[in-house]
Length: 212
Image (tube, rainbow, N blue to C red; front, side, top):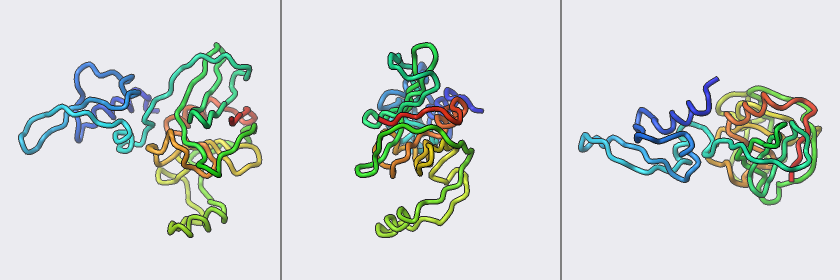
């Protein structure tokens, strides 16, 4: 699997359009912008430019903010997943008093929820069958959803999905990484594909998920 640092190196390089400024480290991706050199075809010279990280993420389909290791002093057991909808963050609790913090997208107004569920199923490149209610709602807004969409890079569920109990909610990837950090979904928790793959490999069926 391609490492996260390799992905962010690709963002900084973007060789078909950009070249990196000397000294840029992967951690720079956590700032609002990244300084790059862009080739100016008109002059035949490289010029310095600051580019919004979300635009770079849109190009390469990765999260605009990479995961971070943060202190954790709560009571949740190691392996627990905590979804903080207000902060747009998902925490995976480690055994050493830390947690991995991932940026997420959450339910928009009227679709957010809170509670605890256990992971009941895991799927790689899951298919998507939007509920009839969702299809009708989106059709009223001029967007026609398919009855079923097979898994793949264009599927809204992304690379992996963790199904929560007997609900319709999932923690899943996305084909729209620029929506991360926002309240945009119909109640599911969306993550960058790189992040959900990492979480998928850590989480087990039966793991507790706390949405707050």
